[in-house]
Image (tube, rainbow, N blue to C red; front, side):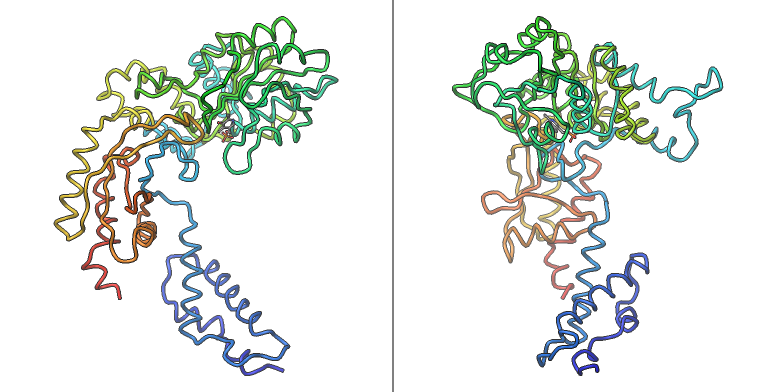
Length: 479
Ligand SMILES: *Cc1c(COP(=O)(O)O)cnc(C)c1O
């Protein structure tokens, strides 16, 4: 028997009508409405005694459903304006792609391609041969292979080298790091069937510590770039070259996880600390290096493994590689990104006017001058003030993010919004709710938007978004 409260829950159709036109696919809307109404039924305690007033009024039901639909709409992947100053922000999609990479990706997506077809022979061909060749040139490596991401690269390497009788992976205690959300080096090692052989202490590991444990059970020596934190003070660890010499003597492979694939000298580029470069590590004797495609390299999400031809060939034969291979869109975007480097991105570092035209966006952001950023900020705040929105030009500290160069901040320029009702948290939420959403950050009780991570072509959009969210006129109209 239905109770009166249960009957008071509106029908799906009635709610759908009241919602009117919503910019979401109708089946998705229906599913949300059903789910929210089912929640209400649950709350009224179906089949049980119902407390009077347990069912909210129709308007409140509508508000609840609209909230759920808003949440669904906002979870759709969409462009946002990154005002955080974090260049390879993992939550915001890491590196934006270069326009030429997007053009290639688009052409490959819309058409058939020679992904695995040899145009000379007219038969099945290798995958990504061009990309692998050019990446090898860029990294000064004998051979290169590409997988889904750097975590995948690491798992493939560990599984492959630890599948035989030798299963120990020798690694410094100072490098048992956690990278991002759930990615912990010790967990990855364990999941790959490797046996962890820690050496040294958190802050000090000597070459002797490695030498003592490397033996007949050692599958490989792993060095992990401490990418998201920096230890200073009483710290010591042997260099890549020293570990490589030991590995050669003991006849075990030495592999370095570099985290970020910096192909350009970050010190020369932006006056910040020098991120290790793949070509250097290989030159210093690492047998293999692995790194991400979407951090400082500025490409799509991918994991690159570079180094000795014999080892790369063996990894490519591993059946597990098949589960980690990239799709054509990733391969085509990465191919164009790598070509940009080979066609002069690196020499162009000295000529920013050329490189920023169609260079690697993340490198262009790294090297843009604060004078240029300040000029843009001034224009924006003048326009905002004309609309009655109080704002000022401030300084900021941009960072690479994505786990690279933890102690390096790049002096930057921000648009600082004067606090209005509700405080900076409410303002930040309003900006996030806009179209496009703007993601700023709060510091010293002020909402700030770092211009280093906003493309100059987005300044007008940023201005409109701030206006729409914060303009006193709009606020009056809204309620
Ligand atoms: C970021 C990072 C990873 C993970 O790379 P993904 O491409 O995100 O899978 C692994 N190792 C290090 C040292 C990193 O900095």
